[in-house]
Image 1 (cartoon, helix red, strand yellow):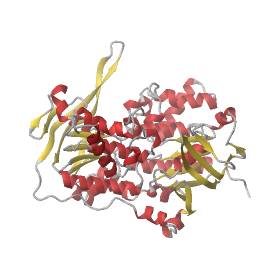
Image 2: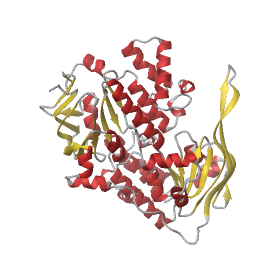
Image 3: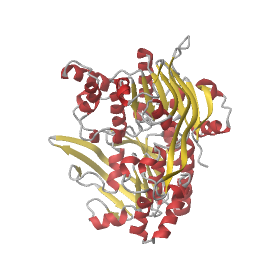
Image 4: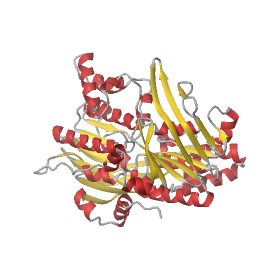
Length: 536
């Protein structure tokens, strides 16, 4: 019998911080054959990412250590304790990895071209022109529009989904034997998810590439993996073929995961409540500058003539592919980017207010960003992060009063209030997103812009957050502007829906009507990709 490409035996990982000891991975063993896809699923904090990082020896040593007897063999070569030269030869060439949060993985000071071609220079010894041509080919492979013009862009100039596609292109650059994907489709819209999964399947067939897929998205597991392992509290509690696990789950934890999905319907309000915020003919055009004196030669019309409204206590869902203008629209409504067009909030025109006049309104207009690691200061504890807004707006008579508000906010989003003095890097991706939600909700705003707030969360936590947002909306009359590529979540929350493409609204109206009978071909394509994700 042929030796497996990757063989992990009795892997354990322990994190130490002062006198604290956390056993993140406990006695994990599994093999992956060449050309095989194996999925590792579980909730945030279950040990999935620590297992994946161990493969490339990327854990923060010496704070993290492997237990005695831990072994990771790749193509017959032991990686635990391997020399730096051995690991350099493997990383990015024979084994490639895509991380969950692309904004923190890409260098903000380097262009996309430099970051993709770097690995081609190092491992393939390509010349500059050949590497650039290969970079364009890779960007087209992962579905990035206008690939050649994107090469000179910087990460901050791309949307979250576009940044993730760049990361995947970098990982595929050297045709790796093993592709380790840690939540690779978290930031992608449903149509690009389908394209990406088909791409990965095609690459496996062409090159015999194996894949270790780390994900909380069970739909993706069902469509792409052959075997699946279910992980919780650092241990694998169930394993088997995808067909068997989905049809006949044995462990209670597996059954709970499979049953978890955002459910319910938006809170019904009769009669229709008043409009909290509305805009007419809203435009956000970004200038394209060229030449020595940087003359404006054109515009990127990110938002081009949009009418939208959100009512008190209701949710406006905004859907569309990455780069369609969803986030730019929401940022313009909150006066966080310059725009042209009327913006009316609570009966007051705010489009021309100076920043000094807008500042008192900021408490009422809150935002939760897509990438929690990038939006949380690594230098502040969770308590300090949530407390910051309270101090700015003078909420809470003293430190004890603010501390009580912080504990309540953390408890509402499913975090242990006793963890308030820990730092963002000590939490999983899903836990960090809950901190970001708590930071916005602690101020009791009237409007919350939610930019992919559940994309980093496990399915069970997604359902909890949806229930939480719905409950908070009902109790406090909150209005939500909900941006997401996860149409299941949008369907559970949105009263009204706008579908965006290339800066324009292609369809708008009551969410119930659009989900039941979409009129536009683009909307129908989004729905088909979301509710019947296919890779064939």
